[in-house]
Amino acid sequence: MSKKNAKPAGKAESKRVPFSQLRKLLLPAYRRHRGRLAAGFTALVLVDLLQLTIPRIIKHGVDGLESLTITAPGLLRLGGMILLIACAVVVLRFTWRYLIIGFSRLLERAIRNRIFSHILKMDAPFFEKYTTGDLMAHSSNDLAAVQMACGMGMVAAVDSLVMSVAAIGFMVAIHPTLTLLALLPLPILAVTTRILSGKLHRRFATVQEQFSSMTEFSRSTLISIGLIKAYTMEDFQTDRFGKLGQDYLKSNLQVASIQGLISPLATLIGSLGMLMVLFFGGRLVIEKTITLGDFVAFITYLYMLIWPMMAIGWVANLVQRGLTSLGRIHDLVNSQTTLPDPVLPIEPEMLDRPGFELEDLTFSYSSSTAPVLKNLTLSFGPGIHGVTGRTGSGKSTLCKLLARLYPLEDETLFFGGTDVNKLPLDFIRSHIGYVGQEPVLFSDTIAANIALGRADASREEIIQAAVSAAIHEDILELKDGYDTMTGERGVKLSGGQRQRLALARALLCDRPVLIIDDGLSAVDVATEHEVFAGLKRHFAGKTVLIVSNRIKLLSMTDNIIILADGSVESEGNHEQLLIANSLYQSMFEKQMTQDSEKEPALP
Figure 1 (cartoon, rainbow, N blue to C red):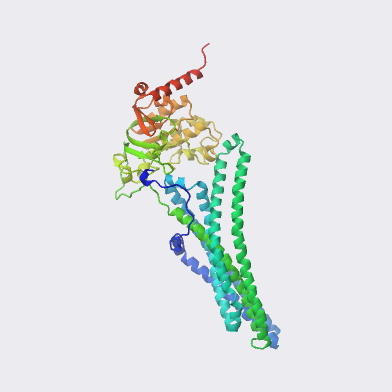
Figure 2: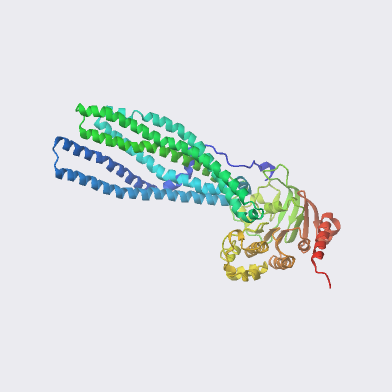
């Protein structure tokens, strides 16, 4: 980007984001499904209340047995009541699971869609900051942690709160002092959980970052598997992946060490409370202060409190994981593009003969202080323009800027006579067909890959584009023709076939501007002439920019620009540059010599 807009690249910092900001990611889904949540939590509370009535029923049975006032039918009636409650609990428990856990999946889908939509709208500097592994981790591990926190975590929090309050209320009704003694150890749990939760947040953030690195490493290795095998790097890559896995395992064990403390601690504190009740409550029964039934009911309620106390640790774990992941997702979806995308009150009309004008344009990437392009003043109007130069002269950068992938200073690049910063990105890009150095193909049929920019294209139109790109005959030789699956990244096709397939895609879109960034480098000379003839027919009166170092291709263009160190060294047609430019002369002589050496000797 320009120096003015340059920002240091790197991974997003792991820092706490205030919950007031994080909840903005969640509120839309909660509002949309508030009826579902209300019904789900009603069912959850009813389950808790029904469970809390069982100790009261047991109390009446025990007291009746102790006083010998209850009969066998009476005990059967109490048992029937417990059975009916259990059946109601089954139905209600299914209801809250379906409604609340189902909501967490709906929330997961909504956030995933937002992540995906946001990523697609971001500019090139964004993808320099976030690797593919980072983005995959956000859409998998981070999102799963948020789903668990807003599903089972939310259920466990509400369940433990309702159960705790109600159980403590029943215990107070039986004996307030005994209740106080039973709950005496609880503050220890609260303080300890608070300390451990802070450590859990930091360690889980490290785990997520390492998962991103491991995912990115495996992705880059798999897509480069041919290169790995060619250089016999299998063992080396395996060792590197093993080290990443070892670091990830170590960090996970550190997280597990904290998780392993929280639940046993809650159990220990619950057991201390039980010890207090057995000692002091037993004395109260002996002294006839409470009945045996009250004592059994009190112990049952205290036993019910063990789950909420254990849930404190579990919920703290889920919440910390969820907040950490939600913070990472928040940073991602709130990242801002550096490309201006104004919304105009009136939609601009499509331009029939659009072109570019560069006025003293200077550009540098965020990772470098040295400008890649320096004070460029150029004009690209209707016709076929060739761009050449040594490696690193700025050819590909120029193509990316024209395609509006990076931000620029105002009044340095004009499209159709208007500053590009004053035009919507969709408007500019809808006029441009782009073929990059590395053709991008999807694991789909050949027809679907050609029709990527025009999903409504007919088979006849797809074939016509393939004919113009000189790829039609190659496609017919494949087993399934246009319905052949290309494989991931077009692995089943040769380099030249992939390039011509990408060109056919651009031709099918039939936009007023076509940019080919060295997109014919893997095509032989004869096919290159055939492709160029198709371009001249297809883009008559339109603007075509071809980056290439092949003299035969450049000689067929209307105008040639030679870049050197980011600046224009020479400009003119083939004959003019052969006379005026030493680099062009040397390229011509070298390539002519190579071509003559390839020709068969005369008998």
